[in-house]
Amino acid sequence: MIKLGIVGPSESEIMPFIRKLSSVSVTEYAMLKFHSGIYEGISVVSLYSGVCKVNVAIATQLLITRYNVTHVILTGVAGAIKCNLNIGDIIIASEIAYHDVEPEILTDYHPWMKSNYFLTDSELLKMCETIANSSIKSSNYYFGRIITGESFITEHERDALIRKFDPLCVDMESASVAHTCFVNSIPFIVIRSISDHADENGSSLFEDNVEHSSLNALNFVEELISRFKNL
Image (cartoon, rainbow, N blue to C red):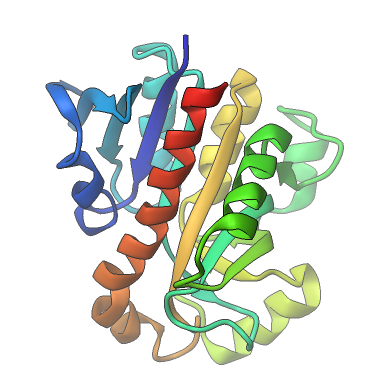
């Protein structure tokens, strides 16, 4: 039986979706509130995890071990690294890496990965590609690499990240969700919308755009959830 875990880092990034759930019950673990309910006939457990890597890792592990979710979807906003990205554009991750963790930490030690990139689930990625190709586009959709680290990015850091990772965007949570799902063998996907341009103005632009951009990402997530009825 399919049971989806839907995570957003902040209230703005997930509560508009949680309010659409039916038959909702709320339970609390580790100071987090988990909203169990139904969306489009699909069983869902959703919450806002809190910003940063550890918070979202705690939330994801609890979704897996306490709520027995079969898939995890992370949604929210991100800072653009690629210059051609605009506010509100939607990014679907094909692979994810930490930009503030040395690759050897993941490849030479637990979880002994083949590389420092976490690959999102291929079936979920195909479902997202179908949506992107078939929908009436109110937003632009891009598939590619997301990187994660716990800081707002300056212009100097941005150039260095482009040289090292060539990512589409940066956030503070995606790699931790990917990491937690990887060690638990749980399929996952990350769907983000651009809120800022990952530079010195990123923090203020984030505040200005987080609600609008979050809704763009959530609209895509809702369309993805509805496709699970056909599985």
